Image (cartoon, rainbow, N blue to C red):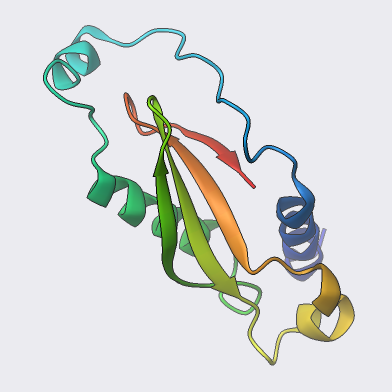
Length: 122
């Protein structure tokens, strides 16, 4: 599958994903070292969650398809951070011409505090 088609499908699926508002599944098990890392405070801090969410968008979507503009909002959901990243489709992108009404304005990345697991992209 061509990269632009794969990226287009991914962007549209993110835009229509119903997972926002759902609780992520429970952590199956943590290693002894991760239990120690979480003993006094969560392994993933607020700042770590923001940087990781931006990195996820930058790494998973080609720059000519989707560009992260910055973190819009972070919600503390007890065991996970929900980081909303403002995104834009570059004006030169074929996606903008073909699928403009379906393109998301933000992507929410759910990141588990205990181990930095990316639970959901919606």
